[in-house]
Length: 261
Image (cartoon, rainbow, N blue to C red):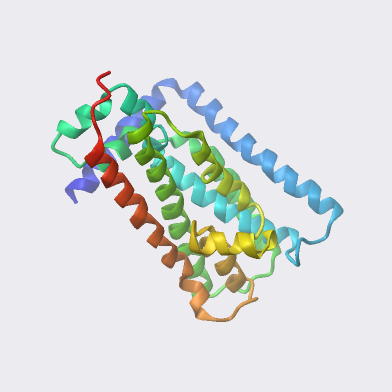
């Protein structure tokens, strides 16, 4: 409980700082909304020409993408400190983190809380509401639980990717831009059900970076294309990905030498 209270205190500090510049906060949030809106327009115009993609309708694709966008937005909002971690290493700020009595993960998490991502989350909520209304899903308790598991598992997967990005900074001091292929690229990949990209991509996103476990397979269950309850719990199985990410972070901390900035 003490750890949670301390994290919430960090969050409140970040929010109060952002609220000192309300216009900047508002414009940034609107900008985040518009960036996601451009992606939505791409999907919209494509479906003006095609009625479906590999059997998935417009409303089903929107439901699929909105869930991924929610997962990414939540992870980015909470774990933004790891996304900007390279600056903390270069400036020597992480040296001060290590000599403090609190856990270093908690301190890095609390160093940055990106409330402006609420614009992206709002866009995802709008698409999600539209998708739910139009795709004729018969909602019941298992499907609602599946949806919640998707959000939880997807947030964990994207957070783990931010952990990996930060851990690599211990060895390079600089952020590695190729990691954006897996973070922002994962969000872009989630615009459509991953199964449409082919068997090799589906295997990669099932057993290497488990995007499919938090998007494609549970979506099939929600849309009644698979009836096995096994698909309902696959998003929770994706949480395994956080274990190697955490181990890599711990290894990086042990190997860390001051940047002497």
